[in-house]
Length: 483
Length: 146
Image 1 (cartoon, rainbow over the protein chains, first blue to last red):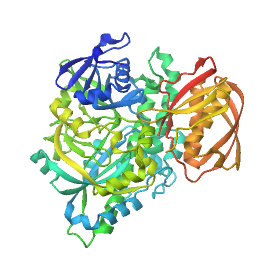
Image 2 (cartoon, rainbow over the protein chains, first blue to last red):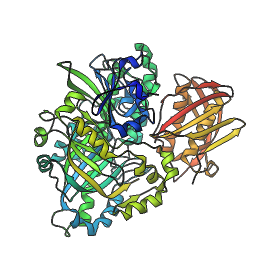
Image 3 (cartoon, rainbow over the protein chains, first blue to last red):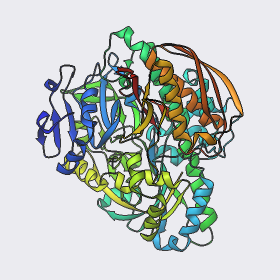
């Protein structure tokens, strides 16, 4: 276990475990925290896992962790590791099983007061149209060969099928399609798992949430994103479903053998990796991109169903029920990017596992509407607590390979949460607080209870204070839809 | 309130749920590799359904699993069973393992369709996975992504 004496504070919100902490570390490990969050981190193995990631061959500058870090497997959740291209490694565990698990923020032109009389019906309609829960298939039936096209073109497939608008794609990370995906490098088992799950939410921590904009902190950014106090917005949190999980499993399994060809030894088998330039590394990257595209398409189809729900419930009752997209970002991904290291630009593979890309102003990959203000960053809280819209900054580009936090971060195990909270009681509490809840499983609801998570507001204070993101708006939930 | 599941099919042999911040984990024991794999399968199936005794015995199948080493064999074996649960809704509750080596197993498995799985196991991880020798045989802790 890492203890307080093993690291030093190097800035108000930045701590560092020196490379000398362990002989197998290739770089130091840095993490962002305040005193309360630090106490949480010392309560599990997340800092030890962070130190483990500093042993990966080709790791550049330092291994990083965001203030929402918690214990995962292999990598900590909330970890960011950049490895040098082409000789550094790529680690499927550094992306996670739910490849391109991410968040999409949709916005309306409606004030919460306009929607309030219909919110109960809206929650029911969203639950009805957006399949969720264990083993639930979706409404989209794919023709033979269509899954392959979907995973190679992502949200562009959805556009062709009528589930998207051009504007949706522009306001999605990578425009909703990462080039270089190869369905031929995906197992039949993954395809079978993904075949009927397009447009489904799944279970666990995934949700659709209707929120009200509680407060705006940056007028310019709020205007650009169209956000205003009292506004009704919607978040989608989900990923690549069984398709992505199977790809991660397949490659973690394949790499168990491959790793020995390159003489790599690691402290945890879940960290298995292969050089980016190796056949195995290249294959994983192409398969990972296929899963990422599946997730973009998945969130896009859910967007279609959300629009449909708003139309069915609100058409003729409110002036304008139009739902537009603010942005869509990935929380679990490895991306080949250019970043500065020791005064020069280098190409790296940035692993973000439970962390968000947060590119600052001027980045050419951002859509025109956001290019001069920075990339929108979407940070969901837990049920009953706030969520945040942030922006990427110069600081995130300089300090964290253009990365920031992704959520609140768990601090209590699922089994302990289930023993502490009754799902039905939690639902009553949330409903009493004005939040409409639609959930397929009371046990699943209990596992995701707010008390199982850290305080998202504190997490955001740290990234804002450290300059690796900037506050735009705080959202509070008014309806939660879960599997 | 439900207690964490554990079972003692034979003296000193058990599987039990243990705490893990992000997900679910099982500590499994067995006198030998065959029994460790058997208990792992029973343990995982008991996460999927409330009571293994309620699983209908309507299907019997022969499974053959190959792997790189004993830990991979454990992961591949459980991954196969988790896959069948997700894609077909089939849970297996009885397992006869034969020809077990560190890289290969054959098994006759019996179970049936369960309409309402209580948990969805999305992946079986290698996180800190090591089959260790104890004074009672072998032990491993498997973390599941759920």
